[in-house]
Image 1 (cartoon, one colour):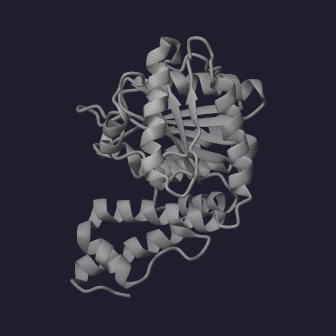
Image 2 (tube, one colour):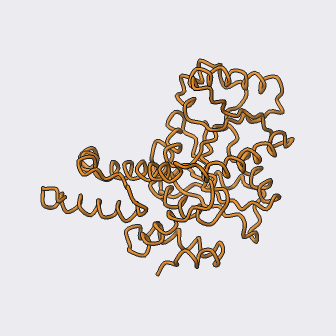
Image 3 (spheres, rainbow, N blue to C red):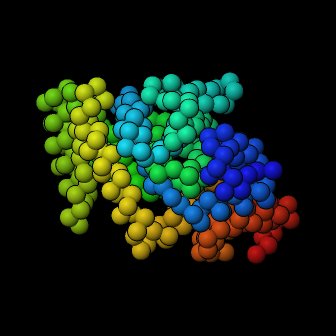
Length: 315
């Protein structure tokens, strides 16, 4: 039987690992859904999608963030999304292997590798439930995407905030706009800032690209960071922690989280039932206007399965 939320808070990393295993093996079980809805109703941490192209240094940046967050007593959980093995379907663990600062005995940090399972956006259906569980337990939850190009923006639909990583000499402002990611990030990091002029030039090009997409006057923070020298890492931690305080106090926070749940549900239904399932969802106005999105999602999926068997939709 899966642990209740209070048991997870006192059971440490082993209890969370068992709960995540239960979510993966029995996502439709009553105990699993009850736990996920309880976690959804009691958010504690800020979720941050860490995205960007392959080789930009996402794993190295996450490693530095873990060390700095823990040094300040801030608990952190990481979902490291890896490419799927073509043989087993499991995660190849490439991202997790780069996290050199992990201390197995530190109960304030938890890392889970997950396979993308072929999803072009780099996220599997299990990422959102895992994120919700971790948010009930940790101060910051980092979701490191697999790194597959333009479809990297998918994480912005489920996370509270999005951190875009860009490396020096990766393009000019027009190329950044063509990539389709300039409307997504809440924070931008130019990695490998120890390269000097090339990094500063990338920051300038990014500011020009953001000026096109942010006509409302909002200025997305752009930081130059180097995992080698430590430049900018403390500033990024300060921005994330400050953003967490402000975000959790926003009047529309609950609405934003329900929107994230709806985004996850739509993607899951589309994967399982295709366009037909999404059309039925729209017809039934199933947008989770309550605090139990996982139970509502499971009920709706059950109806879709019955409808397929009966060739008629049961409302």
